[in-house]
Amino acid sequence: MTYMQGLVSGILISVVVMILTPFSVWASNTIISPDYFENVINYTVANKIKTHEQAAAYFNLNNYMFEATMFAPMAGLVTSALVALFVKRNPK
Image 1: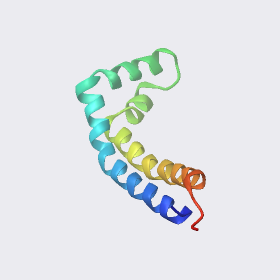
Image 2: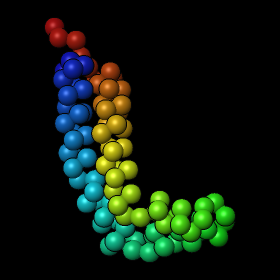
Image 3: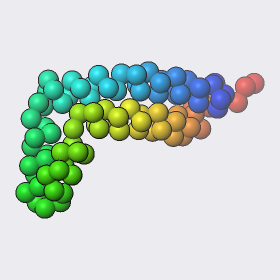
């Protein structure tokens, strides 16, 4: 496998992860831990980290889905580039 083949493979995997990310965020925050946003808002307000309005604007499902979906391809690209360096083989 050449570096470019490894990079392209990693990018394709990153695209699949990006497509599945909104569902996994939704599932983890509505099925697995439905009180997460309420708890984290209360924690940040109680510890004077943010006001209630600031915390509610940041800690919500839409914001988490957006951030996770945008982070997935960036992290995937960096990870793919690094892994491709280690798994590349020179053709004989």
